[in-house]
Image (cartoon, rainbow, N blue to C red; front, side, top):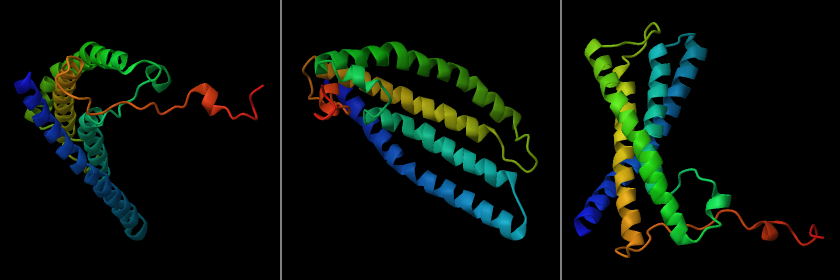
Length: 191
């Protein structure tokens, strides 16, 4: 189990570094957007390339941060239901979800994205908008994002198995974000 946990730590480190770095893409996208708006208003000029660059930056931030979100246990789930189970059951739910939902979806996306990106790159596909950017980098962002998500999915599966077998402590213990209904309703409302 130790080699697998070492591999998992390597993936987690890569994911964390990328996840923290892509936050800057949002700032760059905002600056590009603001710059494009100012130029459009002051000089009455516009550029499809700058608009598409903004979309590329937002897309990259979203796709590259998906694996980081998974590693931080911040992905979407139904907390009201999930939080009512014991931590052991939560680990089983997570493992089941990773193996039977996350990984098949990610692997299917990779299966379709590899030829999709390859064909776009080889053809030199360009934007349908006048003055737009080439398309293959945007498609490559999708592919890279799903590769990162697949790797992080493998890491999460390794960690769930290690936690459930007692080979490691839970690095992200779940704390319900919703108070039980009885505590959420104040005493003045109760009958």
